[in-house]
Image (cartoon, rainbow, N blue to C red; front, side, top):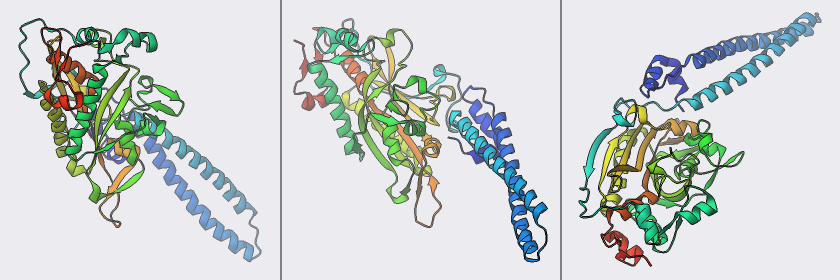
Length: 422
């Protein structure tokens, strides 16, 4: 949520900043409602002051035995007007909040301008894509042939875009999860295992609602399956004032993720790339404002680390202003090389939301009991997507005989150096 005082004081600046996203955002309704609210509050305070003075006058008149009927009737009408003003102010404030909840975050000053993903900026690359001496197969072909992935049975049981992991396929998924969590723990992230269902308030706090309710799996009117562990982990601190000495807080979390709208039709809907249910290891940070820029860089470096340890080639890109997510002020995407696609595909996204989510969720901190609470900054990042990691391992480490070499760092978790199938 944007700072309402910022909109009041600098509406043109906010409009220009939101315009960098390539969206025609009008603040006219907001400004008009806010002005009406302030006018009503001013008049209401005047009437309340008049009522107080009149109450004293009525008391004096009664004491002297004078008639108070006319003044009492006038004050009754004033009271009715004040009640109507209070109701109107409440109605306006609800409308203002609804408008605020629909406004996206403003881009960080360092974010490059651009319309869409075609104008994202590559920052760096790591590793060299393997030169195969044979035609590399797609991960869904490898996984099916080796008995690791069963898409047909999952389709029969759950519908399209679900997968059964079987045998060493299930073990590979679990190995990657444990490997990622171990690496993040070594870096000082406290692991949490969150609930997979959250309330409407939690989804609103991190920005999924109300704008993207159609993309969420709804369990009940007030309960949703999580699209990412970012939602429950960030909301651990909802409506809290945190001791500033504890910041930055760093969490890692494994969870299943559920997304009803997993992408457009096409090649990316095959295999493990766009699923309605998938596993992910998430990183979440709660920081002071002056820490968040540096913490975004370290979070991105942490996501890169697990890919380097796996031996997977990747690149890091900065999302341009027109490709930013709703709650993000700045985002780095990490894309892993996929041989069968002959291109890089997103495997991690690390974002600094600054105080946007903290304002929605009421996450504040203070360094001492005498300090005024300040809104914290929140960050989140994939550390990283597990299904896509399985896909990348199968494709990048496939062998001509149809087997797959297990990356060295996963061997202790897998108990084997090679996957040959049944």
